[in-house]
Image (tube, rainbow, N blue to C red; front, side, top):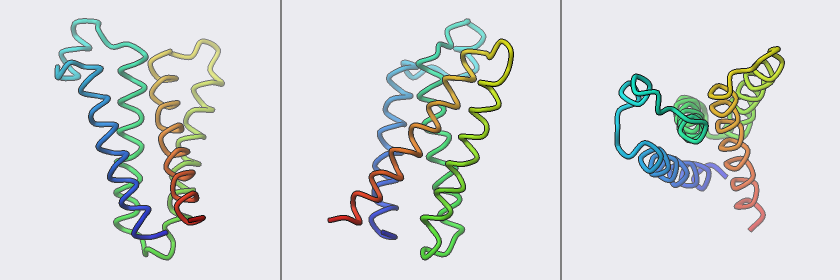
Length: 119
């Protein structure tokens, strides 16, 4: 799992970066926010990328033998953050999209890694 997990992660980071570029048109985040052009789609893609980059940092600092556990811990943090936003009386849609993007990206990474171990 160790080598393939990092390879899968790098492919998913690249895909998330492409999605962010496509959804922002290459504009800077601060400019999009100033212009009021931040949408759920942009925040979802941003959340995907942020979660994958956080997972990459965590995995790079962990013993490869503990990568599955480290990934599960990162996912749990994102799931908790999503639950906290969902529990708010009037959750902010951009934050819901951001947190959901992160949860979805880490779930997909975990599933892809488990699938690579099955082969």
